[in-house]
Length: 106
Image (cartoon, rainbow, N blue to C red; front, side):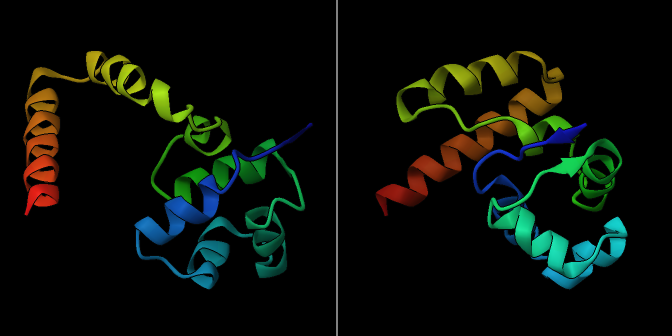
């Protein structure tokens, strides 16, 4: 079974982590050309490759295949995700959100 990736999610995650395409391809044991096609939305991948990519990017497979919520749905999505975090991680997320708010005001 092949799985479509969320639009731009793979490249965004890779770039956010500061990883090169060749690093991710090598770690995930896929061809660089396959990674390029996946990032361009020109290919789907099988379950094994999905799990290898997720492991290479230190994330869950769901992160790579779920679509981004619409702009107006983002606050509710953040709240849902935060409700599943530990108390410590919620405090860290709140501190980071406060940092972002103050950084954007500067």
